[in-house]
Length: 115
Image (cartoon, rainbow, N blue to C red):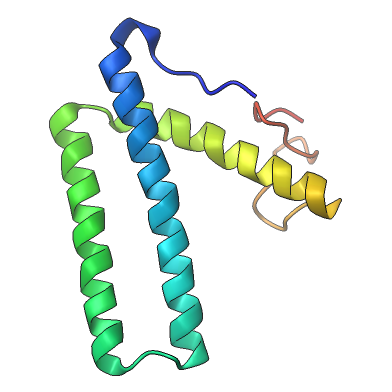
């Protein structure tokens, strides 16, 4: 699997990759926070602090993307990383993830997003 980075503007390509990875980690943190909230292991105060921290992180990421003009690079890399993750999970489980991997062709997505 190859992640395409804008070779004409290496700075934007590299920053796009870094921010995309940060977004993946942020999504994981959000999923873990939701799991803990649903499990009742957080107090109302902890939920509030966690929500505020995650919102601040989202805002900071959005601001960096806007200031550096890398929104498209991030979106491109993120799409490729998402496709790769879905493919790996599908391969491990031997089945598609409902709603995540199905493409218009109705087939299984590959690392490049093709069926």
